[in-house]
Image 1 (cartoon, rainbow, N blue to C red):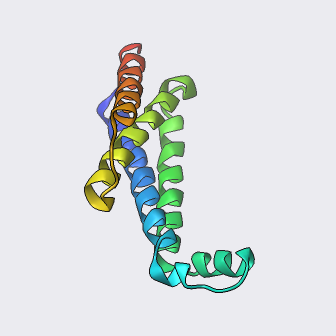
Image 2 (image 1 turned 45 degrees about the vertical axis):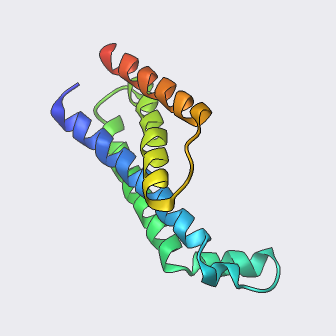
Length: 123
């Protein structure tokens, strides 16, 4: 695996993780929670939220970078690295959203990280 592929993987995973956090912030915003009415009205309000739009744009950018990754390496090699997004998202959620990390979450995340390392070493 060369440096370009590593940078593309890290970029795609980081954008995807950031998208998750931004979407969470948008979904939990007071404006979204204050919408009266049914599911349709709430969904429409969420889709008009600047944070939701930003999160979706970040996902789109992540997908574009992911396509570049797939143009350079086998899917069976690249896909396990998506698991690193779980690690990054958990860390960012704890640091910036104040979410709690218990032993089971930490252990599961460590297992995911070890699996990604094993896959990376297989090339």
